[in-house]
Each structure stands twice: as structure tokens, then as C-alpha cells.
Amino acid sequence: MNQFRTLQINLAGLRSWLVLLAVIWLLGSIGLGWLVKSLVFLFGLLLLLPTIGFFVLRWWLKRNLIEDSCPVCQTRFVAINNSELRCPNCSEPLTIDHGRFHRLTPPGTVDVDAIEVPVSRLED
Image (cartoon, rainbow, N blue to C red; front, side):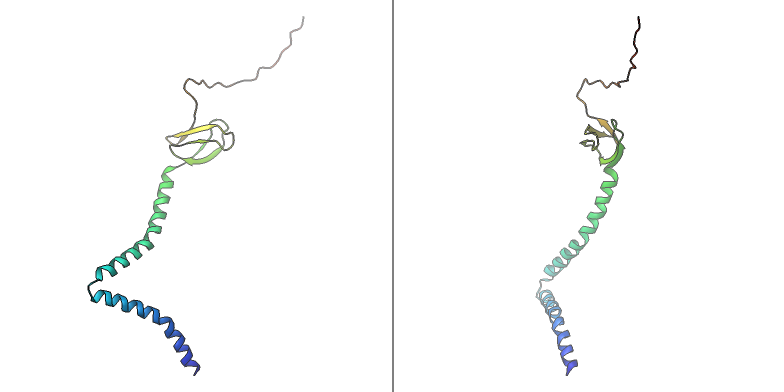
């Protein structure tokens, strides 16, 4: 008697699969095979697109992520090529050209390096 209940439970789970197969067979036999093929194609596409998207994203990141150091404070960090950003350490505005970080300064700005001059006393 217990074996019959187990068989009945297993067949209940199989019923939904049998109904699905019967609907597919019915649609195919009355000339709606194109509908079934379209649904199978869309289902396959939904399974395949995330995998393709993952590899495309990795390829794009490999080509467009640049690691360099800030020209002001020498902090190394990563950014996207051909963009403008601020250094996370010193907040200097930077631009990225040809894989290198450059200061983003207005036209006519001259960069100078300040040096410390020791103080000397003049005595009479």
C-alpha cells in the first residue's frame, strides 16, 4: 500500500511535464510549429545572453581600465580611459589621455615647483 502512495506522488509531479509536452505536440501538429520554435529560440537566447554579456564586459574592461599614478601626489589608482575625474587622495582634477593621467588645468596655467630657501641672517 505504501508503494502505491509513493508511485502516486511521483506521477503527480510528472503530470505537469506531460501536459507541457502534449501542448507542444498539439501546437506542432496543427501548424503552429513556428510558435514552438520561436519560444525555444527565445528561451535559449535568454540562457545565452548573460554568458555572452559577461565576456563582452570583461573584454571592454580590459581595454578601458587604466592604472596610473596621480601627477601631483603619486597615488596609484584605476580609472576609465578618456574620462575626467578627481584624484581620490588630493582631489586634483585629472584627465586620462592615451593611458596616462594628466592635470586638468585652464589654458595659460604655468606649473612651477616651489623650493624652500634657507633663511640667513646678516650681521653688522
